Amino acid sequence: MSRYALTTDLASLSLPAGALSSVSSTDQQNALDVASAEADGYLGASFRLPLLTWGTDLKQHVCGIAAFRLIHHRGYNPQVGANDTIRQCYDDAIGWLHGVSAGRITPVVTDSEPAAHSVPRVYSKPSRGWDGLP
Image (cartoon, rainbow, N blue to C red; front, side):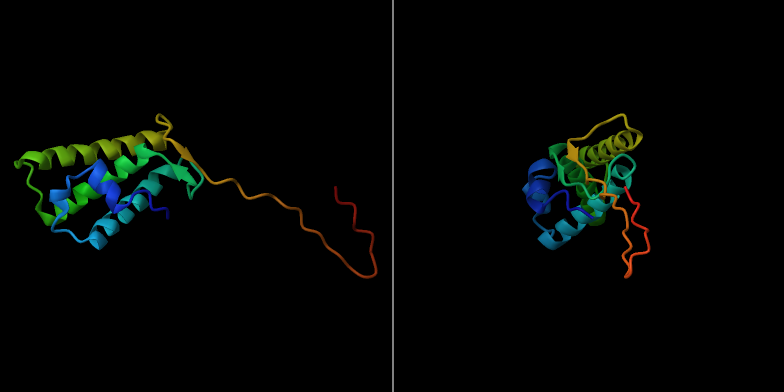
């Protein structure tokens, strides 16, 4: 699994630093890693994993998923100001990943190269004449 975002991304792309003050950096990174694994489930439908590079678009949506999970764990209340916005970011992120999975959205990524296909060779002594490979 790739780690699409770091805790610094979470603070810059999703939640204000104050919202994260009571959450350890380990818990933040764990939430980002879980969100990255969830994103892989969608990305794998359109791209060969693991991705080699990715852009801010994917980072932002992974941060949106992780932010909602962190706030939900802390105690989500849709009646409290920014909590509804955080839920909307999560919904947007899942919608975006659905679009990627369906091929309607093309994220800024470089996927893995397919493995080079090699032809097996058989050697024997004495030669039995089976060397007619291309």
